[in-house]
Image 1 (cartoon, rainbow, N blue to C red):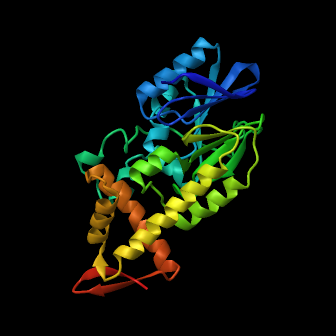
Image 2 (cartoon, rainbow, N blue to C red):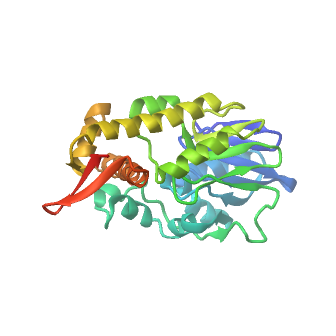
Image 3 (tube, rainbow, N blue to C red):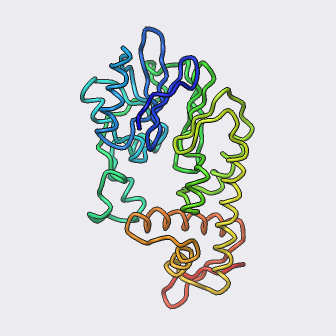
Length: 292
């Protein structure tokens, strides 16, 4: 774990639960792409940099999920480096309580206030700032989260954040987290059309060709949507839809899965309502969903 892997002439990643990318600029200045899930991940990343004689110049955050920004505070405190982000992701990085609050839809109880969903806050600099490494391309990749981005380094390596899940994760969990289903599908199309010597997804194997995996991700989205339509044969409240989806895929409910899968299913229902696949009605003060 956390072994250093070279992805391009000046691009690397640490093989961690959420990969930490490294772009090595001139003068042995290193930019991390995300910082892992906690202080320990940040410490291990710093040790790798120091072992190779690389100085941390900054952290480029793809998005604000806690497993991607968890090492920010430690590294910022230790080195004074800038953390770069933008849009809603910058707000969530400055105020990380927003993530579990958004997922739960209210103030999160203690079972949701842990490092997987609640990172420490860090100071943020916008991508537009003059100190941002202008040779790095910022690639919008919305869908998984609000303003998620990827990065293309000067050697052509593309870091894809969370826009693609591994086949193993999809087979195990089926319903992976998506904020905006329509935008997510558009991002899959966009990435499928990209060319690069190496792609580095955060939660799948790095590869020069991800087309088969992208297609599998797309198929899973449509499979989950079809299953929700099947469940919604009669008017049902959200909680029953969620319960039946958990039962169908053999998932185990706890607070974390409730908010992650629950938020995703709400996003599916919004997408399906907007596209005319389901109808929503209110009856006896219940919101009910039914296949159109």
